[in-house]
Length: 86
Picture 1 (tube, rainbow, N blue to C red):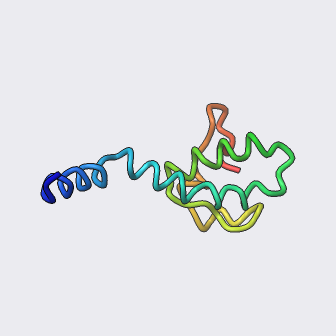
Picture 2 (tube, one colour):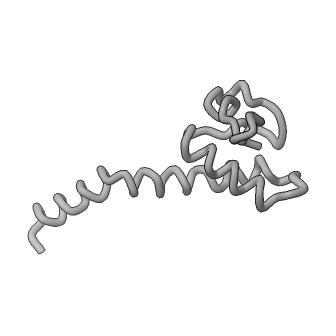
Picture 3 (cartoon, rainbow, N blue to C red):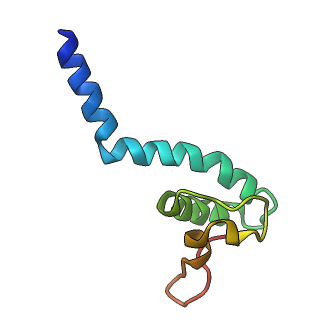
């Protein structure tokens, strides 16, 4: 394979939205593990933390509170108007 073809394919991979979502998911996993480490419903916590992290690109520090560190995460609401993010 010619070098310019390989470079082009790599550039397409890097600029695709799927690559950025994958990168965000990789970064969100460890942060959500910490955030949900003391949750009683850990599976639900991890699910919603992952959704919020992917959209907001941040997770507040600690296992509870600190939502002012990430306004997008803090302000997301579910269909009932309650906080969506753990």
